[in-house]
Length: 236
Image (cartoon, rainbow, N blue to C red; front, side):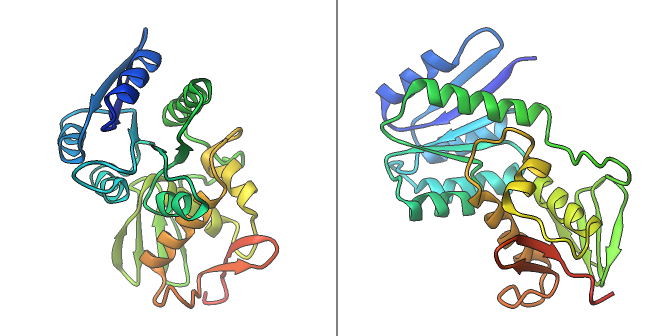
């Protein structure tokens, strides 16, 4: 099966380098140099990975990433950018990116991170405890069904991305147990995930925004200081 990678990068030298180094047997790379054309091409094809620059001539990469996520919740996104402060990385991950690589970069590292994202796209991480993995759950007025990637809050439907759904379902299955970010990365993103642990925080924040009556004061997905996150079953 061929992998199709869409690169949205305005620097022609970097676009040419990525195309030359990432393309090969079984991998097709297309480069677009502005955000709007990149978004148009994303909507026209079936892609296995997006590589996006933060600073594009017609739009900010964060805005573009959010637009990609509205169209396609599952395909991995890697930011490749000179904006590489901690704040920049957090903003990119919160926008829906799966990985963040700063410029200047080593091509061997980019190739390794691309391979990792393509592997995860082909074989999403699974909870080793398989029993009941895909069974619908309902706790405290929240119902989640991994088979249709949906949740319901007091009968109101809530659309979830694949990882949001698996993360919520996992926390609900193990209600009242606190999980560290590293444990959640291993269970939801898969063993060997080499991206940023902050991506867990970003997904938790997006889940809270979707299912909590007051995301600033969550009642379902709670932070256990010093440990991680847990789903509170007290409202059952």
